[in-house]
Length: 240
Image (cartoon, rainbow, N blue to C red; front, side):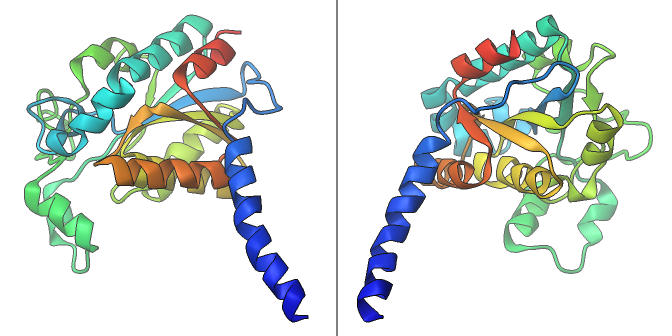
């Protein structure tokens, strides 16, 4: 019994490693037209613009991955191929600062006013704010066809209408990218999978606050996602 337990103990890491490696290969399922969507989380100034409040935390990883260009390639390919695009942004309004028990990171985000908004009703304050979309992405996002969900408040889509919007369009497979790799992308991945969606994460079209955070994110993707692709693989599959 003791020997069997030891054998299992050493086998588990090998099994995990194999699972993570297998997820790096293109998945066995095609991206069916009409049932697949591109979902991008937080393509906003505070993360992606050099003047953004949190840009400095992501700058090195974004440059190393060429993530800003890669996200644009995904947007462009989706539009050219007729694939629906969904953006799940972050946003905090004045009333959100009245929360009694925000988590540690949530508290810091609120204190730094990252993705801060003044107007929850008319969105008159959005243009040019830290919560605004990166300018180079606006032609894809503001074309009248992209679904921009209500803001998510913590990390996942539990608090916005992303799942409703996807289901209402008959989507069952998601190509996922965006910020932050280890937080919002990770949380969106988990919630989507828990709700029966097939998810491919594009590992070089994300950004994390440092190498360790990125490594942790990609490790989790390998265990949770249906597949983990790079941008070249995603663009090829999306364009078919």
